[in-house]
Amino acid sequence: MRAFSMVNNDLENELEQLRNQLEALKRERGAGSAVSGEQVVDTSGNDSTETADVLADATATLNTALGVDEGTSEDIITQFKELIDSIDKDIKNEKPTTLLLVFALGVLVGRL
Image (cartoon, rainbow, N blue to C red; front, side, top):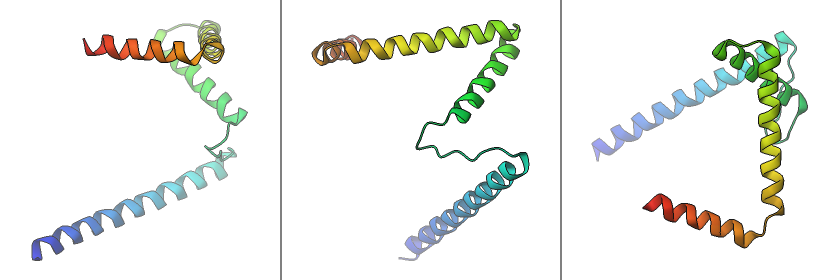
C-alpha cells in the first residue's frame, strides 16, 4: 500500500509541475503578444492574420534552407497552395465509393 501512495504522490507532483509550466507558458504568451502588438489567435477558427504569419514564416524558412531569393520561394508556396486546393476540389467532386476503394487499395498494398 505504501508503494501505491509513493507512486500516487509522484504522479501528483508531476501533474503539479506540468500545471505550473502550462501557467508559465500562458503568461509568457500573453506578455509576448501584449508587448509586440501581435494578435492572440483562437485556434478553433481560421484567421487571415495567422495564415499570413504562417506563410511569411514558411517563406523565410524556404529562403534560408534553399538559398533562393524571395520571389522563387513565394512561387513555390503559391504553386503548392494551388495543388492542395486542386486536390481538395477533386476529393469533394469524387464519388465516396471511389474514395473508399482507393483507400482500401492503399491499405491492401501497404499490408503487402
